[in-house]
Length: 124
Image (cartoon, rainbow, N blue to C red; front, side, top):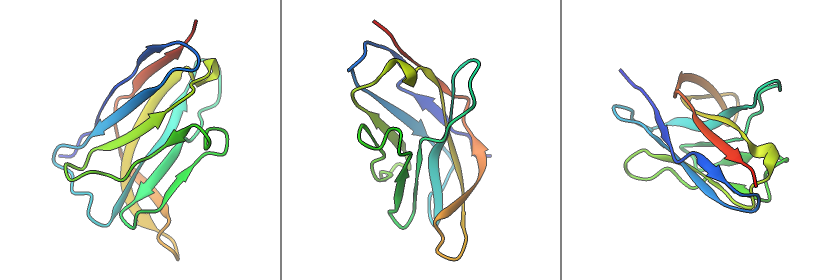
């Protein structure tokens, strides 16, 4: 059974950086997709952060595009989220997920497996 394990969260001051990891023991990235489809802060709606698929295509939300990147999935099928110049509004629980590509271009991702989340707190 596939399960995802996030790590790398923590507390950081505004302007700082964090790199989140999503390990995927038992998962074969293959022709699929992975991403950070949800970050959830208390009292707010969840927000998608970004995704990557096996074709190498990445998408990142406009709100963080200039500061966040999703590197290519490595040989160990580990997904990362590099977050630079973090702002207080980045405080949230970040969830990674894996899924199956679909759509005419294969750029959509139907997530079917989720991690438990890792907390990011940005505060001075």
